[in-house]
Image (tube, rainbow, N blue to C red; front, side, top):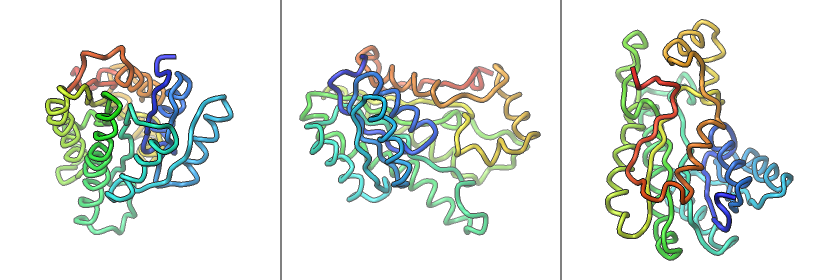
Length: 255
């Protein structure tokens, strides 16, 4: 039980990496607030945790709204008496939005969800972690936090790498500021992972094969593989680790 007596919020918990992380954290003893803008998805994840004997409540919320972000944090404190762990897994890509969306609106929304949402959740979580005597924030970055898309993708105006680069820099800056308060802040860098977020890419067999070839391990990651890295970052096993970027990418960024 690596997270026994810990209270954790996981955003983006309805599916993919967020869902896998919420399930794994509960398995290791955490009381989990499963939050997502998708209320049905959040409830599904929380129900799955309870069915397995864990402790969880679903809390729908939009991380881009400060009031709703604050409400998610308040729900954790009201239900479980405090907050020790925050996993910022809520995120979108440009492909998550309707193809008719204006390019400027795509840019704004991706930056808003991926970067501003991470900021707002941390902003409201930190005071509760201070009251608890410390905590751990795990931000979901990406391989695109440190590298760009391949030239053949012609994605110079794509906001996703910009948003994830911002998440990494926010992680480092916040980690320095929070170190004296015993609040650790780290960033995960998943490679392409089999989630609903990447489905639009991997449904095309040729595109999927091309993506797999870019990973030295020759495949996409699984949400559970990223979740185990998040578990390490959230647990006391990583107690001297803050401001770090941990790639979970099948060797993508080692090239």
